[in-house]
Amino acid sequence: MKIVDFSKVEVALICGNKRTADIHKQFAELIYITTTSLTEYIFAKKLYQNPVVKLTEDNKMIIEEYLDDKWGLPVVLRKAIENAIEG
Image (cartoon, rainbow, N blue to C red; front, side, top):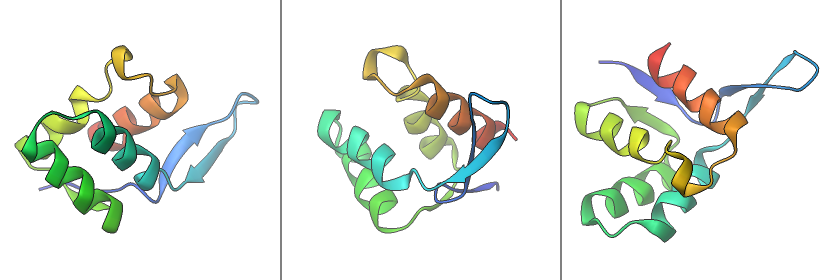
């Protein structure tokens, strides 16, 4: 099972370089304030407390749901998360 550390996600900069960023709290807050699902609420609280996530099928489905444009996650962060869960 894959492990993703949301405190060490590689984000592409406009100049073409990459930078490691800690995005776990920002992503957890997005899920926490917008979810209507108890499962996603629990996931968000766990992610906020611990940036290391086991990529179970359920966790991956939650993460992928919040990569949709409708949630307003910046494209740079969305791409970084996509790369982290697929890479």
